[in-house]
Image (cartoon, rainbow, N blue to C red; front, side):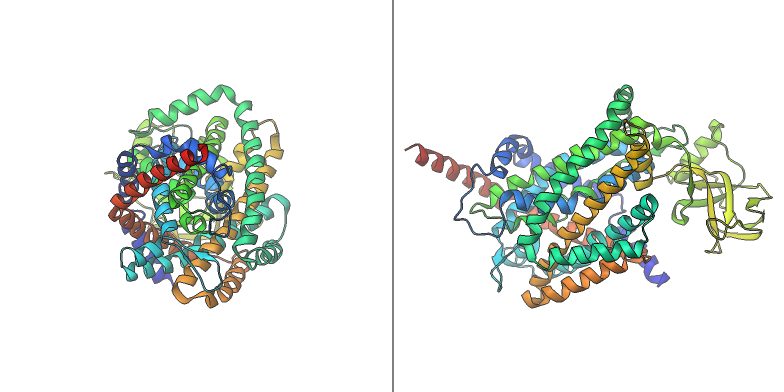
Length: 558
């Protein structure tokens, strides 16, 4: 199992974690933005008119309205990435990472416009009378690349578990336990029943639920975020300044944060942007394929709104909460995660400029003389006797380090450190350091008008965001199964999806997350290739749409 995990890490490093991937993702968006003459700006108002029902045709084929399709797609994108993903990007890449999330969203608005239009154009009606669409259909029917379509569909099924089901309930269960003391298995049991009741009803029930939940969850979260932003209004200007001033140079050290190079800020910003708004991944087109629309371009225009709402509005609010509160570069008492913790040989301090420079180079994979710690640490009642090492955690130097076997029982004895890692997985490490992900967002939300009660907004937001994501991704997975094995495979898939959802509430799903990280890229790259091949057809479709639209308007006047 460990070998398989290492293989997935290697694949992720060659794909999503590779230096070239963000350039490919942004490059496709930039190309279509210029090629189609900034559709995300020119068609924004028209998109709002369409989603409001102004140009709706009741005779059009489909299962959902424009708004319901948008809500379903948004429920798939607005999830843990908006709460924990932004915090993770900032904790690794600094404030500059937020700038690159914006760029991913701005150019992603065009990418999503293209992928949704083409997927809607080549959708088809299934055996049970519902609509099915997505990149696999245009890959198969238009590009005649059956193998690519199958690869994309398989990756979608895997991602439905690794993106939409397992990590979502895992985050919900942890949040409910930390905030309210609910046992993870109890949270999983209740929400699994609710999930089953929703998704077993198919797209119409999914659309009905998400069209109500999405506006509610957005309103609750936005109110909570604004309560922090206005409370720290004097810090908003400096926050924006930090985002823009470091966008092309990386983020300098601040507080406990040891700094990030441009490469880290750029890579983390773009990758978290993709994880959040999914522009280019090919998932949202599956939801939009169900919409009632005679003109695929009209549904493509509706999708322009998704990255704007998801990233430019909600992720920006999260980012401003984290930056304006100052929580992002402060140290807090926390349990050190093994994946974010490294033992270094020697003593380093943040007050020494030379030490900060050395650690900056080490953390950003630049030339350095840092050595990993190898040897034993002698511990008495949780405290290390020898002090010939430094603990790095979440890109900061750990302080007040304590070792234990459980949260309450301190450790006495020796601890072996091999290549900077604790050899005994039973040893727990606690202390003060920077924090990241949902933990950082939760702390930041307590620094507003609601005080400590702000943490409940994050917990409720996480519950609604993550649960709605699980709902939407179940639909993406069942449409992929429909393509692969037909309509009869959908019900077994849904049952397995709910079972996995329950299991992940109390189990270690690290391996599945790694698999999903690879699957996301396996979805994205074929989709980007496909829409680039069809760029001329896309432009012609847009031109034809406006000719027909103007003709229909003239006919109405007559």
